[in-house]
Amino acid sequence: MPFTRPERARQTVDFGVFDCGAPQIDDWLRCHANVSNRNGSAALYLSHCAQNGELAGVYTLSSTTVVRSETHAPWMRRNAPILIPTVLLGQLAVARQFQHQGLAKALVRDAVDRTLRLALSVGVRALVVDPLNDALTSLYGSLGFEGFVADSHMYFRMPKYPRPEADSSGCCNTSL
Image (cartoon, rainbow, N blue to C red; front, top):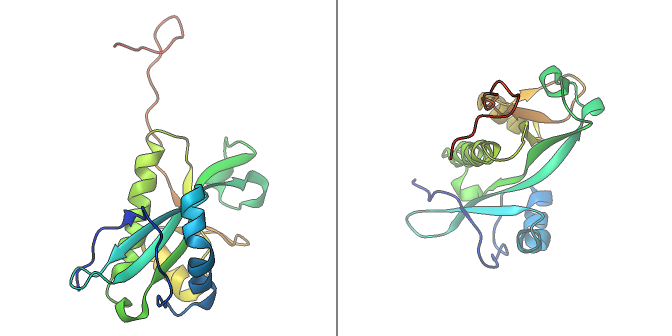
């Protein structure tokens, strides 16, 4: 079944009948999603069933940090500030009637794509998730997220971007 590309919620969303099967996520969506989207603490992205327009899946992105001393990811700790800039994939939900149709993977890929585009402009080391269960841990692992021993987070590493070349004076070469 085809789904729409996720778009940022621009108005209040009615999550009253939305059911992903995880009560803690359903409750968060009903009680906090709209306020978080409105006040900027979480960006809410929605995907709908292309056939009938029904809300099929949602996810949120937020800026966050990971404390360097609390991560066991070697690449994350190396040459990093005490608070490592990351993006959090906070809530990921697919309505029960649309589960097992590839939407969860599509939503995660969309979140990764948005984070990669953000990382072109702003310092971001990784997209971070805290999987609720083993099935989600497997899903994230299949999409390139890495988990580390004694670390509850999983990370999708952002690529390193080239730095501007310095001229002989030590200043960056900029030509406008």
